[in-house]
Length: 168
Length: 188
Picture 1 (cartoon, chains in turn orange, brown):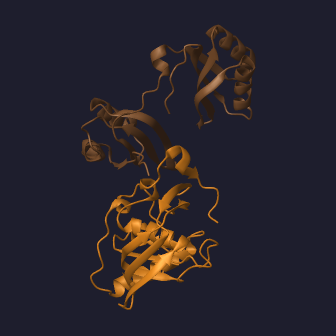
Picture 2 (cartoon, rainbow over the protein chains, first blue to last red):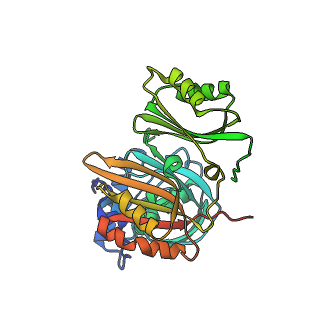
Picture 3 (spheres, rainbow over the protein chains, first blue to last red):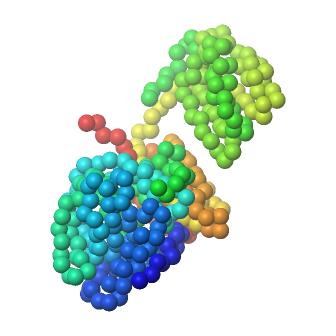
């Protein structure tokens, strides 16, 4: 549909808890298409959440299949409405970037295994297990739905925040 | 770490700062090594375009502060580096670790004057002791974002929830995000 401009912090929408989707109507389907287009247009982007394009709803899209960290372990393009984490385990620190906090990356510890439930655009409720980089990406995007940025997760400014070198 | 003074050692605090270039640490440690000083604790980092070093050094007595100053002066003259040496008293050498819960407080929001002052004053007034603090300016030049991350020891009787509530009003006053997390190490 359209590549939307990315909302950058300190825009207050990024700190809001997004509203759940009650009905999957044309507006939500259009939102998902916009999110996918915006993700594909973003340099190296593996996910976009609705508040990042200015919509405070619990919707995000993820696709780590083209990323070197995720190409061997992924579920392809995930279109997630009202996602919920049912269980999480494991832990690893990865250096994350975010289009809403340009020019910086941060070391964040996240679970490496997730059990997840979400609704797909056709209304089907899906449950599955994600691991590795895909699990990290899902948690990052789901954080956006609760008003969290990676800045909320870093443990040290000296050792945890870095000027971004590239988007690849 | 528990650093306690041995009666045969003299301790000094050395502060060195100057425009960053390759070799500042090597030059500094060379002076200390050749004098027979031991670096007991140090923190060295980039601040803007400056490289800053703070070191606690010791040397067997007798040893004078003047000797350190002279050697640093000889090494730093014409380099743009400035060095400052202070003799430490007995009660400045023994490190007393914080007794209360350790927490990590992160603050970020649109840059404005007073973020560090208001947050740290609020904490100081309640007896919270800051053990580590770093700030960074990020974001776009047109919309700079100030990030402050500090570690602090809470006094007895003040919980993480109390500390969080203490800073709640500042969120609105300064239009910043503030989070308080417990980081007290656990023995496993």
